[in-house]
Structures are given as structure tokens and as C-alpha cells.
Amino acid sequence: MATPNPAPRPTATVREVARKVRGQPTTDGAGVNMTRVIGTGMLDSFDPFLLLDEFRSDNPNDYVAGFPDHPHRGFETVTYMLAGRMRHGDNQGNTGLLGPGSVQWMTAGKGIVHSEFPEQAEGLMWGFQLWVNLPAKDKLTKPRYQDIQGDQVPEVELGPGARARVLVGTVNGVAGPVTDVATEPLYFDLHLEPGAAYTAILPEGHNAFAYVYQGDAKIGAASTGIQRGEIALTTHGAQLPVIAGVQGARLIVVAGRPLNEPVARYGPFVMNTAEEIHQAFADYRAGRL
Image (cartoon, rainbow, N blue to C red; front, side):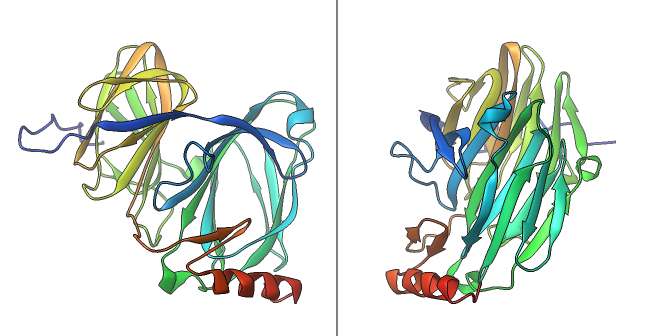
């Protein structure tokens, strides 16, 4: 049985919402419509997070074209599916199917060319893709996948009207199935019934955000209101209080250790210098990814 969420300690630092930003409509891949939350003119990045997209539609014209072959180097992509089925493959012969509730943590490292296509012609396709930077020492590491099916993602009861699915890190003593990630992240999907409250315990020095994808919530020490489609960037601290609105709330809460390193970024490549970006393009053109 999960340990009940502890009451806030008077001496603990409670996080505030430093900024909230609404996601922007965009199109990517071969014409997939989505909402971009991190990686826009309003919010370029949030160290170590480079991009956050929410894709959600029951119109196949919004997603059926998928993401044909494209390269990556120097960072990690995290796909979390709420509904629908996505098939992926790469130039190394790896393939896999992501279904409802599943997560894929792909470490591109020194480089990979992969594709992602919906394995459905109709119905709801809903989920998130997050890009997480890699430290300089790991930019050219060997690529790897962690493909986790939905029934392998643990769910933990957090108190009255509160539960969470844990992808990576530990929530109330329950560890997620994704392991050995350089930025020591925490990523969980929080479900709150109307009026329910939960105080998340986060690594104090990590950068953390909460993105509300259903309902609305009050977040942080000042109970800042965050609506569906908005991201809350928080200050540092040990605790993040969340209270659901009258319709309840579902949100992803993500924290990661900031790298505090220079970022050179162009399209699908994220390195530390412009010279490394030029090398990435040269290696891609030469078929070395």
C-alpha cells in the first residue's frame, strides 16, 4: 500500500508559480496538428526541457500523416500516450507500438533516424511529446529506447480523490519504470477529483512545471489558477501544492535537474556549440546517424 502523502512541513520551501503560459497551435511532421507548449516564441525552453507538444484530436486529418523519417542527435524524446496507437521505427531496425497509457523514453544520443505513424485511421489520438536535453558528456552516447506499455506504468493512490500514474522518478514511494536518465527527472500524470488536493514532493533544485490538460487547478503557495492548456513554471522548493477546480483536474507534473550549459539548437539537433551542429548535419548527410 502506498504511503499517504505527508502534510506540508512548516520548514519546507513551498514552490510558487513563477510564470504561466498558454500553448500555441502548430503543425509538425507531415501535417500533424498539435498544441506546442514549450518551444514557442513565448516559451523557448525551460532547462533541461526543450519542447512540449500536446496532440489531441478525433479527426484523422489532424494526425494520420504522422511523422516520416527524421533525425535526432543530442537529446531525448519522451512520448506519453493517453489514447490512440502510434507505431515507431528507426534506421537501426527497431520497431514498437505505443498504445493507451504507454510511454517511450528515447535517448537519441549520437544520432538516430526514426519515424512515428498512427496505427489507426479514426478515433481519438491524444498524448504528449517532451524533449529533454542531454548534458555535454552524454551528447554522443549510444542511442537507446525504453518502451513501457500502459500496464507497466504504476498507479498510486495519493489521498482522497487523488491518484497518479508514475512514468519516471518516485511518487509516495512508488517508482516509475523509466530508469537511468541523466537529468534525474520526475514525471507523473496527476488525476484529481473536483476539489481534491495533493502536495507533490519534488527535488528542491530541479526545474519543474505542471501542464493542465483537463479541467483546471490552483497551483503553488499562492494558489495560482491554471486553466486547461496552460503550463505553470514553478520556483524551486520541496513542495508543490495542487488543488483541483470544480470539474476536477488532470495534469502532468515534470521536474528535471537543470544542466546550465550552453545550448546550440537547430531543427532536430541539440548540441553545445555551432560547430557541433554543423558536424551533426554533415554526419546526417553522410549517413552516419
